[in-house]
Length: 158
Length: 158
DNA sequence: GACTCAATTGAGACTCAATAACAATATAGC
DNA sequence: GCTATATTGTTATTGAGTCTCAATTGAGTC
Ligand SMILES: [Mn+2]
Ligand SMILES: [Mn+2]
Ligand SMILES: [Zn+2]
Ligand SMILES: [Zn+2]
Image (tube, rainbow over all chains, first blue to last red; front, side, top):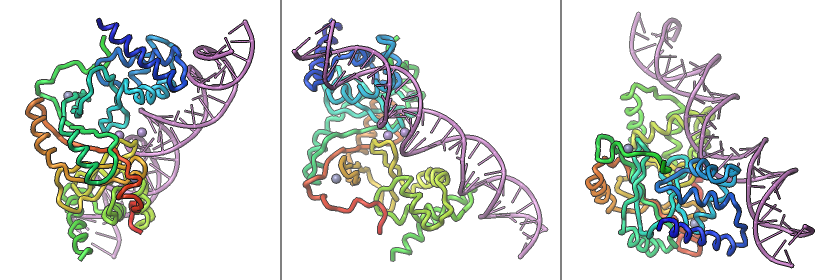
């Protein structure tokens, strides 16, 4: 059941907050709920709009304050695609090494597997003698006249 | 001789400008000269500061107007490492597929080879049926207590 | 070298994502 | 319920990058 799965994430977020001595507030839970109601990539602005449907008191500042908490708890992850604003996406399924393909025309984002990144990260750490914290592989593309054309570009479902 | 090599780039830039019906101005040449006097990665602000040493009339707007020309002519290239400002670097040597390793502490950037990206780009284009325009592989790391520690982080020489 | 005129420029206003300050409010432990 | 303080919304602010526009200047033409 979908709801049960989401309940599991809810508990996980509440635990994260209490473990850090942070309070479980209506606004934080609304923002969490909004993030997990979205199957795609969303911006901070998207998230604000959606969170306000769950709690109309949510402010922009609180969204920006909640985003680091959600990323730190690994419930969502940041996706930087070279625009001057950031995208985020809920970590609903198993995480493997992935690349982001972004269409420069319609801004649609596709996550695709890139398993060699695990090996590459280790190689870099070894060769340069530094600790690798994160890796991002982004592919800029154009999907016009192609298979993906015509797909809906909305980030939040209905 | 260093100066001869630079002269070659100067000619290349002048040709690029005239070929596009653009004028060879003092400001554009100062910005070009500043970019090529730097061995590392630099920001637009770095470039402005340096260009003003060659022509103190150079303005911020003109730097931002020149950057697309320098990238379009392949004399420099943009390096986005996920910060809210962009880095650039002069294309002095042969271009292959490279990844950027950025230290999250000192912001130093290292370019390292990542030849598999050529194959990967082709694979993505084929599998997703879209045209790949560009690829960026970024590695976030920390170089503290390590081989690279103590290196100078200044972008412009002396 | 002077003439002409469109391309270019610098100054400063502006945009927009993101952050900071602060007084008002709400949470969690008692 | 009471209290201490974490959190909030509002509002102002930052900072990279863009835009506008009047003043300037480069590059062909004589
Ligand atoms: Mn960016
Ligand atoms: Mn920005
Ligand atoms: Zn597209
Ligand atoms: Zn470092």
